[in-house]
Image (cartoon, rainbow, N blue to C red; front, side):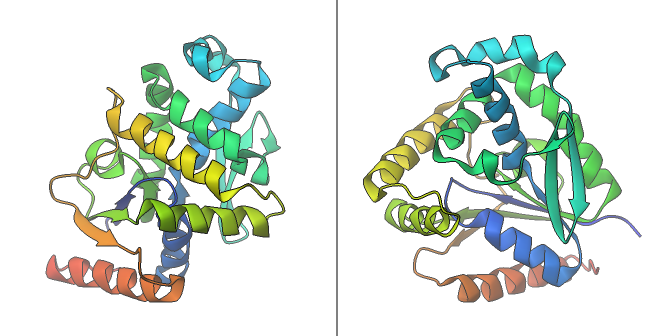
Length: 229
């Protein structure tokens, strides 16, 4: 049986990671958080003293980075040089680092094979910014998930509060606006919807309602192509 590929793209805070993770659990497939890979490189860059203004210097430390992705305890764990970083890569500042390193062609090339190898050996739901356009251009289902800037900022505030890393709404809103601009305007793999992607806006939906609607959308799309798990 061939492996199923589901690509979920969308801006930061649209809910794609949390929803994709739950969809994967319900459908019995592997969830791949590609953003965590860029966050890991961003985390390492910051630890090396590389500022956002000189992010191209990350190219000089790529040879020192070994990333291993493990699927354990029902989720994905990213190991940096043998260390499971956990929530260390979820700090608000690391979000900006992730967006910055994602503009560096050498970083994208560094991670491309990692992502493709996972998708070629597992049935996956993979989320990020360029999954349907670059990483999995032949995915069975492509979805571009969006939500209003205000809704995304509120969700991010709640997420950080729950993790014991509170930040102000105004700061998060400003970061989201800045990151959207970075992601959509970068020359390498900008964050845009694939031409054949299905648009899914969850600004006014609660989590469970969004989850139910997303699963139905995926199942209906697979069924229309005579694809079954």
